[in-house]
Length: 414
Image (cartoon, rainbow, N blue to C red; front, side):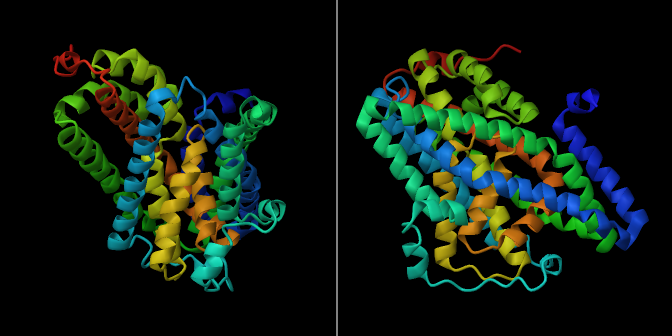
């Protein structure tokens, strides 16, 4: 049993995927008898989402008030991180609306009778302000939870030391939720096995190919965001620097990010290449990069936007312009505190999809559908996250006069 947990999680999920397909093909409709295992896993995810969003968002806001992280760099750093995340999700929404990965994918059979009730825009905006914050937490009203968490976090910043006990509680609560999240993700291989066996047994193996267009949209979006936002807009237009030199300098960190799927694990390498290859002086690298590892989720935001639209298309839900705005806004805000969460995209997308009226049962089906393919896409998304951290750090270093252009243009050693 111990050896099982020593195997990398993504390898266990991949093995569960392959085994699930085989079992489903052999067992056929009888595989429906084990779908409860997958449902239990999805229920565990839903259990974690609300407290995770609340405590990580409060702790994320509080962490920005740390003088060592903010100082004279704070406003510029936070603003550009939020801007790049917003641009990323807009790219994702545009690709999803254009490529329409959910058209032709019928997931409604898995949740018969689930129909979205249209919600007036005025009611949706009114629901952002909770009449009862405790009820909002109990009901899983994500927009209201985000609003209340932001108020709590900002108020803790304004009252200083008086709020330190509660701030420390939120930080400790975040660690608790991260540990619970880690345990939940350890169950993922069993949930994946049951869900994939059920899908392939009841709908056929061909149903699994429906994820190809979704994956293609994510890949195109990640490359487009890195080239357009970080290569052209920030490097070429704003800083008048060579995008080619930037990507060469950031190469090592981006490769580590691809292999580990973790911005936090890549942080030491990111700080090294920032100082040695990109000419970012330590005062900026040690401030901006750790903050980016916490709040910058360009790749994940892009992915969540695509999956949310995919889900709506697969269930035949028409999205209005207001829905697209809600997806973009809620993803940008929720991303503040969730970057360090293992499998962050799963919990983030569950929270965001609820804001556009997708039911918990529908969310469960979507997560079960895409989870087996999440790992390779997660590797690519993390590259975008880490590349964005280094891009923003380069911009802030330039603005603050903490940039060594000679190191940026210096050829790298092979």
